[in-house]
Image (tube, rainbow, N blue to C red; front, side, top):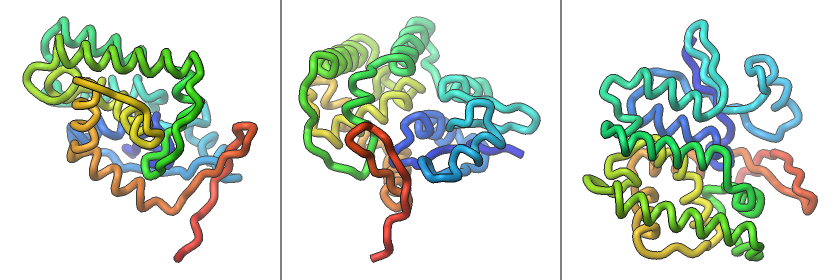
Length: 226
């Protein structure tokens, strides 16, 4: 059995990161979505995942959890090295900014949860959120200026770094967050990327929705037909 177990594509940023990489390289794997925040979600995931979270890759007798670890598995499988830059310096920096995304930007995550189909009011600019936005703007500008030759992505050609920052691009769009210069151009390129556009259509068509309460709790529900 070879499955990539995911949460709702519209909401689960951690799910779409390895999914974008898998689709980019043509990984032969079944995509299985477990809708998030429903009463039975946790029980379903506990049956298959040591963390009861998504994403999860099941590849024959190997089970891999965590989005970055799954992406590295995909990179090892990819026959032509499409996941990381070929140049050693670019590859090292790409891994650095990917790890930064994997571990950082807590204020952005809290204030602007991913909602690909949503268009929401810009949140209050706290010190933490302003710092996260500035770091992202600066990083994208720098990557595009110093390493972006050969294509519209952070390191020219598409890489795992772009998979990890695609959910951030959607957050900037959903919440109307400011971007300028090379960072704005990069954001536009991601939103026009064919692999992302296919995923976006799926996210928009999903029947599962999540509502949030004032204290940050969430619950899933099916959108009524019509």
